[in-house]
Length: 432
Image (cartoon, rainbow, N blue to C red; front, side):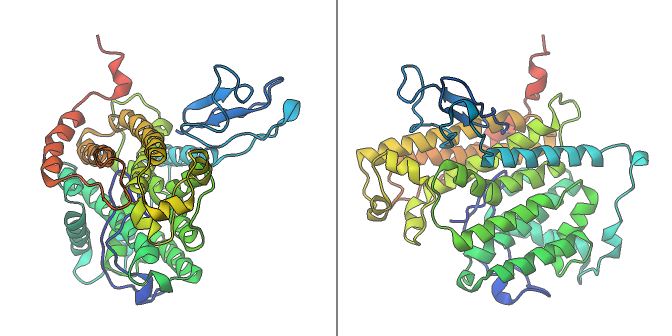
């Protein structure tokens, strides 16, 4: 299940493959893909293990089974533990820390690009140098908007409040992510090879150099000349597609975390420079990027929980194997698809984790530019309701697909708009 979900629920695009890719490389599908600073793993005397979540700090410190401590076998947010080591424990660099390093670098990149124009070299005016597709960039952006409207109507409606330049840029990012996702989960996915993804990555590099292959590429190529967007999250998303070609199980949440970053958290990092941080916000760029990442992770975890049965029928299980075993469950239980008390208990724990990521994301959304908040709030509110629907289905995500009905989607729009008007969280304590 390549679930692309973040600030955007990424679905649907179609175009000619262009040079470097065969038609099978760019296949369509009706699918899905969707902080994080970590407390450090420390060697402590008389405390053989330290269980940490980079986002939520240490979840437990002490001897396994010790009163008042969390068992090393039952973390809520992370299943990563340090190896027993006594006085000379060697810290494990977790996926969360690796991703946080990316967040820091992206925030630094944004700040460098936003320095006064006279202090930096202006980016090349690629838009004028493009081998412009017939119909020009206006038609390219219009097509991106049509795709967004067709497959993510609620989010699309939210983008209409954004300035024209920002909403067109978000549409262009949306479409590129969708097309990338199609490579490994579309009708021709069985024909996709690592070499095809290598070609797609070279095409991405050409796009960033102002050499788009087709109309939809041209829209993104133009976008990156107008906003401080770095190529790294795009490359990381392609790495997520590579993961899907070779991996169908995740032994712990640390592995799953990295996968969720690749296929969904990256979209948040791509989007922040376009959404923009509110001029009045006192939040750091790192915290806003971290919240965007948290939203991507939350949405991706939600997609995973929604689609357990669908993925199992394809031979894939996107659930931490160690946590399944701890709950007394196995792959065979997933394939049988029978809701038991063990399964309900396991699902409650997984849902709790996803909701905690949503909660972290909420503060960051308030720090975005006011006109950019509405589509993000709408997307987030709808995705949170999917978790409610899983509960309403008595945790039967084997044969029932949790979805938010049209009426609830419509009702979410005014609620999201109201939330978009709230003062940035970083300013609230300063108000009398």
